[in-house]
Amino acid sequence: MPRIFRGVLVALAAVAVGLSGCTTQSPPSPQTITWPQEATGAGRLLLVGSGSTLYAVWGDHAAVLEGPEARPTATPVPVPGGGESHIADRVQRIILDTSGVPWLVRNDQRVTTFAGEEAHPASAAVAKLATGSVTTASGRVVSDRLVADEGQTVVDATTVLASTFTGVRIANPAKDLILHRVTALTDTDLAGRWQTNPPKTVSRMPVGTTVNATAIDLGPVHGVAALSSDRVAIIVGDSRATGGAESRAALAVVEGGLVRRVDLPALCPTPNDVSIVRVTDRQVLIGAPAVSAQGECPALSWSRTWLRVDVIDGTTATLGTGVQNVAVVGDRVVTATTTQSGRAWTTTFTWGP
Image 1: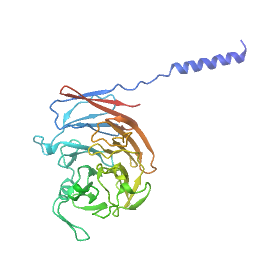
Image 2: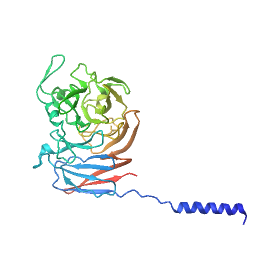
Image 3: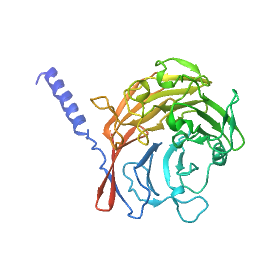
Image 4: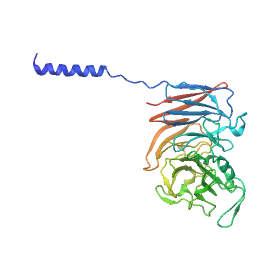
């Protein structure tokens, strides 16, 4: 046999051996959990990912999944201080602080650990924001300041962010909203301002422009995420606006005393349908209903479009469309779908590669 041909055969044999050693890794099987029928207060699954862990809450029950092979188990979320669970104790949202630690926001706006047993040290100070009256620099007395349900997040174990608004917002939700930085002892205005006429809202800012954080009207806030100790992402938009910029969700970053508008595809600022979760110190995961082909926004939608947005360079990746829930766990994307059969609700978690 010629030497050259023999060399070709040896090379082909080596390739065949190498290929025989390759295996195709199949994706992990979906995980399912059927929530206890005694679980109360569930309107939508709450889902976030941090590190290698997935956190889910359904009503007053929670599940923690340590990877795609874990067997999810539902356990009751404890009530701070013990005792029976009441409407005020039910969980509204799961939020992540700048270290990726999960926290729970309760119906009465208390922020507690994910274990549910301890309140954040600044929770009492946030509650005080909604008491008493406020006199603005112009001399106007505001006697009905309230804390917005959607405007709370945690920076770290000592500091939270909370947004307040006045009763005027019921008639005009673009007015009188301020984002506060709150500890147990301090309260600092971070962004927003009191009523202006005409209002200059974030939604009307050109993408990429920057203004002083206290020289802009935020508009209705639908979510806040603390990305670092000095970088905050907020979602705003007026669901009651008929057309125009305010009728679409807008993303802005508060950093260094400035507010910067970040580009965002057309999404709807539908109340209770918008989600924003920290992924890294420069990325957020945003979920919201998509605008219909007719340019309309739904009154309520379980299916949402999910985007991973880099707030520094403005790049956007679509992680899901028409999906109930999405979470980022490490370098994996997890989707979750909750269905009903009789009185039972079952959630299926599907892990991407």
